[in-house]
Picture (cartoon, rainbow, N blue to C red):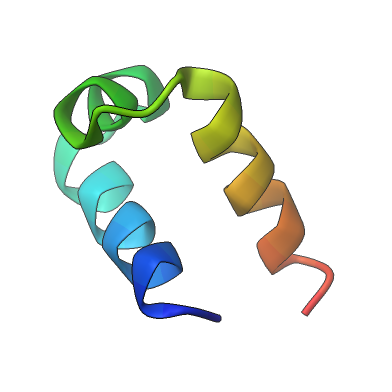
Length: 42
């Protein structure tokens, strides 16, 4: 897991919503979702 992944994780947890976290981070929702999906493979 990279530092960026941790930032995404914490933002999703804080916002309680992937779409809101993506907006806050300036990412598209699909990128956030893909990062989350990749965590289960580690």
